[in-house]
Image (tube, rainbow, N blue to C red):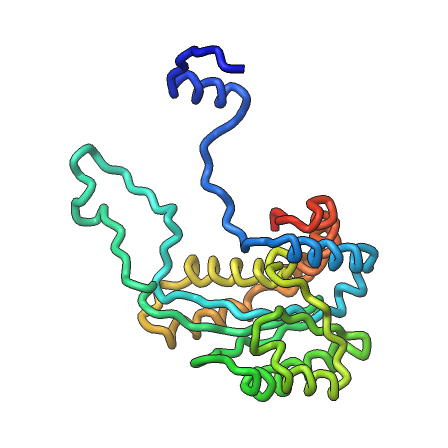
Length: 250
């Protein structure tokens, strides 16, 4: 009901603070349509009763891009008024991150695949010949006959020649909902890998050195970390159901 009372923005802000509301940056997530939410909810219901052993037999995979120069936007400096642009107090940025590399990787509860460096556009044929055939199939054989392969719905992954090859190889493929990186635990492996490279090495001088650092740090990540990620799948599907297919905190 309108009261014709003028309230200052300071008063409004104070009242919001009193009930615990603060100005925050919004979380960035893929746009979800009604169809996306429905598919995500169906996925969660279909896998809600999966056991830890069933999830342990899944080979999770994904691509990720890593920039040569990293800027997380959280850097802080101590300075006095008027010193904003002094030498040593400016964070310099390079256009487009100074270049980047795209890598593909995969892991399961007990296994991990070395990084594959994807140069140029990844086509369906390259995905089949350079990733699925030489890397995915041997890893699935190590897991056993109950192994399940997870990859997302990127165009090269769902090319007809890839689908035919996977079907002929007798691979069980997980039906993955679109726009669902929060359901894929490998996203957190990429985050951990990036943190380790930035914290344990000097800034890479070039893309070749960046790739070398990524390969070194991936080997040093304990398998227990990957097991913890796979063990989170039951919680991920439970939260997906609670959110009715909406975004989760993962």
